[in-house]
Length: 395
Image 1 (tube, rainbow, N blue to C red):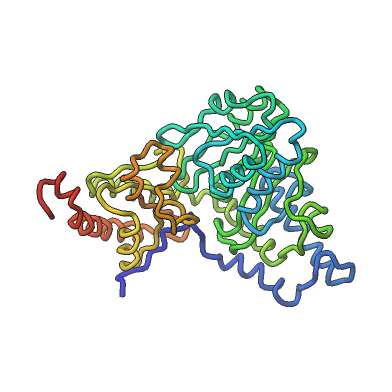
Image 2 (cartoon, rainbow, N blue to C red; image 1 turned 60 degrees about the vertical axis):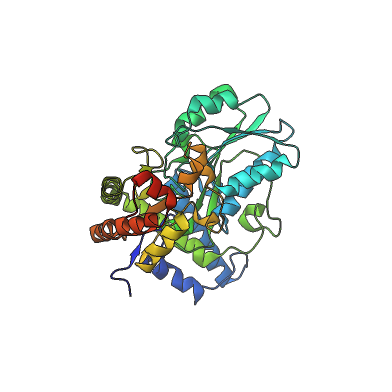
């Protein structure tokens, strides 16, 4: 049995909070109506759905009519990218994005390329930041969409979305701007008007709501084709009976996160202590991502001369849950596309570790990681002939 259990994989998913669970429970039981039904149970459900939509809209600085519920952040990303491209192809078939987007965006863009769209992926700097000027320079007269994530899911780098939006609109005011805010929602203060975006996605399970619910903000007046056709749900924009319990949970989770956003100072302090401790205690390591413009709980570090998968298994045996690369691609043996875009060598990218802290973590968790991790790295490096060559002798 491990001495202690530490969950440090909050960027992959979070625990459903008790307050969110309590808010959801009635909608699994007595409040079981279909929001599309005209009888009293349906009207009660419709009122609850509208209330959740209005609460989320208020938290994002949006209008109630601009919020659409989805089954995930990936669905919202697909809808934004493909829907905007399809609906506006009469104006052009060019799309601008970055090399470090989530695969839900990048693979949507690859699908669009197969249908005749042209995609330009802008480089980022070594910290993972993309400059507004670089994005604007890539925009052309036929650019219908710019897609830049608010914060990176692997390395935690926060992008200058408001500045990017302003630069793009100055270059081509008709170009739509979408930001994947799945990792940022509930952690950063988000106001769609201040950001200047036309679309924004978020996902429940990143902020202590359940897996299987997300939302997409679509500014009123812009053209976006439907991704899922069906009945008249979501104002005839997304077919399928709304998952009311989960939507209620999403609204409560976002409210709780925004209300407790000052807690991020404590999480950031733990993050910095963990980064400094690892870099100080373990040689041949590097921090991946920006040091300052970084999500509060994100720690992404590469360890030379070891494999990330082995590191994860040893951490797990010691009760520590973490990730290597992004959780969505953890079964892949390929090096992270994000780390490669940052200029991290392939061999170092294979030895990456992401520890993502959240509001449930404590200073004791950080202490435990710092106590256990150096010994694990030392044991793994002892088996590496490359490390023996560099270090002069085996440990």
